[in-house]
Length: 535
Image (cartoon, rainbow, N blue to C red; front, side):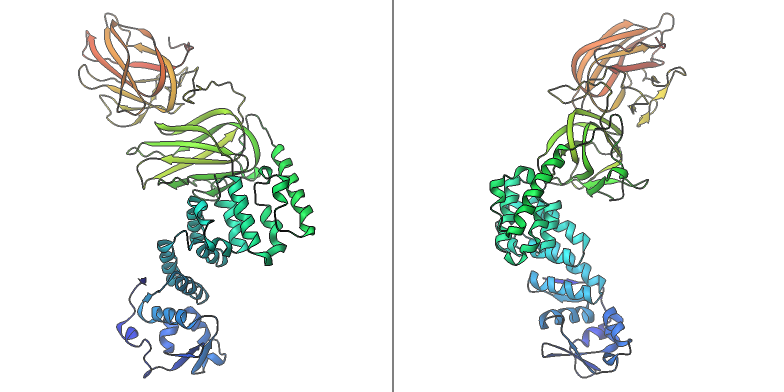
């Protein structure tokens, strides 16, 4: 492996290990390295501080270094002089990273981190996460935990797993075993404990991170602990079970707030819930990691509201899973087959929840973003279709208030908000419709609903009659014709077979005496017609 950065001056590269003009010798494990003070000061903060300190090293022509090996120091010195370095193994990279951190060579730290990401495997990731946690390298730690999360069942079979440091294992149990069966985690930790007897005193701290409510007393007895620890383990198990039975229900109140202890574990800014204009986001890739939120406590919830950051060029889909313990997950929203945009008002059967995972999907390498998030237990009545999981709305959802938009008409071939046409009820919308034989109008709802009813009010002038067709779609690719009428006017009550709807297309095929429909008022819902003053 070799890595490089900005090129130092050619004369610097020519002076690497050149004895003749050197003015200082660095000794590592008995090996001598000729060096040059001016180059060391220019390229390394550590040596600059040393030579300007006034201590004996600042004037001595011979300096001994004790915190590294000959091979590692030679590699770092090579980078200082040449801007490139050759590594023989991942262990070599890790040692160079450690020394670069000590020497405060930020550029070399970043380069070695990139190299470790590229060379990361199931066999060496435990060594990498050890170093990342030890050196507080957040980016490398996050990368390593993500890698471990995806391949945990493979990694625990490697001998390197027993080499995990106590702190690294703690990070893994907190953030990298999501979705892994509790039994698998239990046996992995048991193996680590049995191969690390010198860490007995720290075992209770590790056990605290396990899903104890799923572990029997019989299994707890298998842990290699002293008598003093046994009671601690059983107390922890009992406390964990009691906590799981203790939850909060706060009707109609958003509990996704800092005062309740909410935090972002992964997927965007950790301060999302503490400041304005922050974003939750995750890169869309396979397998999905998504956005992970810890509510801070267990709450009973049945509704989530979130504002998607729209991208007019992309179609987004998503699903949401919830958990009370970060181990057993329930998918409460699965909108992976429908296109969504804007504000999402989501409802599901009441669940005991502490952790929420949101995974968006779209073309690979795009980013799924959320600008607002709420979770609550709503007392407002709602009905969910058992088969599709979609909301069955009893009130109009084709409104400005609900976030519906016109994405195509004869006058504005672009996505625009619906315009209100009633001062008395601003939730009703109206828009100009195309000329006869010249396209159609397409309305997009913010999310998929299960619908069976629409209401139209056609321009009700004397002698005006219209013929039109209505199609619906969930993806704007495949359309289903659900209704048509010929030579009608005024208010139209439309019924059709109940089905998922995201897009509604209205096509006029006849208008008399004009050649266009002047203005249309439109609403859609399910089961119950919404009577208003506009009609």
